[in-house]
Image (cartoon, rainbow over all chains, first blue to last red; front, side, top):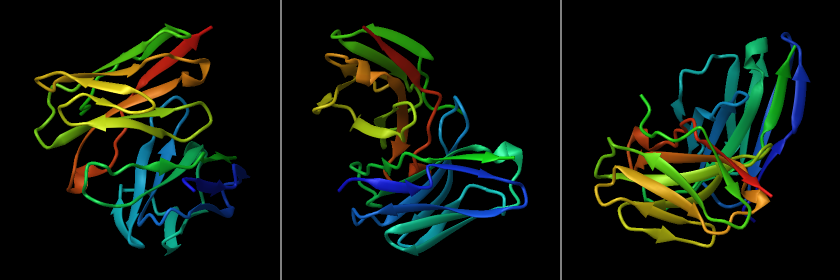
Length: 115
Length: 112
């Protein structure tokens, strides 16, 4: 199983709503990632979890709150978002080694629209 | 501060080889070259990586010049399903900079 599953696939929310994006993998990977991708732009790294601990936060606004309940699950909690936060949110996982064979496996993403 | 330079778009005829170039003139000795692609409405997918030797796998071949300042990804027999954005990424093996950072990529369109 080399799949990273993201739910929901599409989400529409208002600026006062609270919602969560979910990501799951069963490859035994110990690193998990959130990327944000605006239309026709490359993915941008938001957060990295390594062994269930937050290791990198790329200066992401606090209205985005990541959570890693266990090594297979990654959540992104959303609160008081702005319309400019509308984007494709991608989750990825990897084995988290320093070796050159480190490969990221991506989910298909959640397309988020903030109204 | 882009570490790689790729043409924004390329076309290729179905069944022909697709050769995607990438310039990485400031690459360091401990940095590898990785290629990922992103098909429309999907997440990026790993293709291949290398340090200084040519590499081949079931998806593609990677040719890295002797001075390591550029590389070419080769899809030997392109199909319509290879239409995607192809990202060339340079990254070290360790340290905080080892996180995958995507550049602008090349939109490859395979034409029937």
